[in-house]
Length: 110
Length: 114
Figure 1 (cartoon, rainbow over the protein chains, first blue to last red):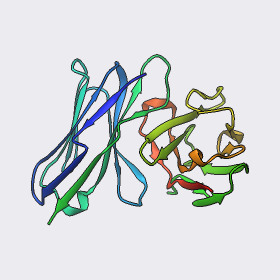
Figure 2 (cartoon, each protein chain N blue to C red):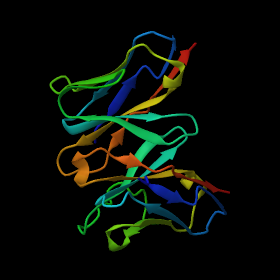
Figure 3 (tube, chains in turn orange, yellow):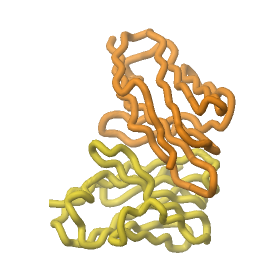
Figure 4 (cartoon, rainbow over the protein chains, first blue to last red):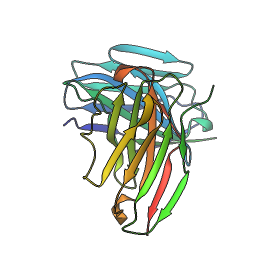
């Protein structure tokens, strides 16, 4: 079974700061997802990637398959970015469901 | 367009009762997933449907849990003889085809077993 570790568990930063959230996994994967969950809210998919880098607005996700590691970056952070960010992986070998990290609770203070 | 919908949004039941949770995926999406989010446990995969193929039930925690998907669209997750440890938010997600696509999540059903 794939083990997914995220760091940090909690992060408080000031508005405008550059944010990095890390995700490591133990077994080779076919895809990695970054998800966002606002308090009391639903889950939104931010990125799905299997190699390289993707960018959407102020969000950037990178993955290094050899090192089994991914990062989610937020540039020019804003209080509305405050949420839980969850890394999830789809392992190979016919396993279809996602294995989730425990999430990073991000608070951006104005 | 309409997203993934789930009903009910909240369900309170007594220990030992059966419950049914419903998921309506995005129209045209052939893949449907059920997940559970428990306090202190995070998110966990329960079951996956893809088209008319046999579902991947590898995440179901016990034989009290079952799910079906009728006509390749609506899905129902059934929990028999509910236990207090079944209390959680049950989330449904769908994707256009297979597990190599982005998943779209529903708002979830919060289940409380007294």
